[in-house]
Length: 341
Image 1 (cartoon, one colour):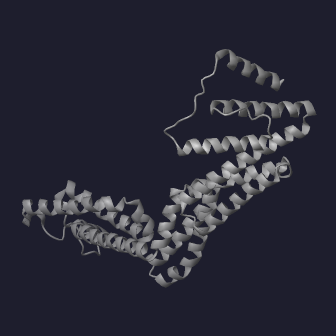
Image 2 (image 1 turned 180 degrees about the horizontal axis):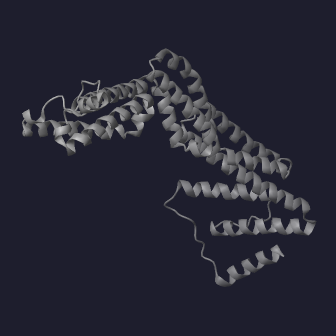
């Protein structure tokens, strides 16, 4: 009988619904729903949950409690003032109000934690954005993830009220972030060129064309050091990377040509030089110059360069178009072809 009596007490409302104004009661129910609905957006904020994980987890739990009580009396308004249990003096309406108040306070606390963390850890967060812009999370996923976990640890310290611990751990994180940034920039702009330099060495081009190889190596080294000092000076890094690419391409082509000449016999070497000389003769003819083939190749190039420089200083003059007799021109081309043979 005692148990039945207690059970009956548990289901009795703390306030007689009959004494309540239905319109006022509905207004109270609607107000509770408005608060529940207003919290749903912040509670789904993934960034907020990342910054204040524990607070947002508790906020979600209390919000669910409030929502559960609301659903009971929203469908059956007379249960609004029903006590929660035998020994409880709180009604379902009061419980939902208290749960909502707790959830709102926790969300506000989480927002304050986020603001404080962003302010106190501004540099690590900026570094993370730079790393993301470089796609470091794809190029070096393991290291990036480790650094992100370190940053989260600092944020958790702030969320737990241990600001000094977070600040003391910040320098180590900044150093590691910078190392990853330098590594990533090098991988994007310079590592392919370093591999090409190694390939050329393995192919012996450093011995075949040592001066050109050394020039390419020096350009790469200068760019490598610049990234160490200024990893965010990407315009300069890109320009240095292009200069390195050009030097490496020149080193490769020159080295391969020299290797081919080393393997060629005397007749093949002569044919190669005659081919170059023929092209120079055609160019000198286009410039209205005399036939320069009675001079060494270096001298021919000097004379051609002198005329080209002069014409560049007089752009209005344009290239000289010598008027030549068709028969004479055919004879010159035949003579050039004969020389090649």
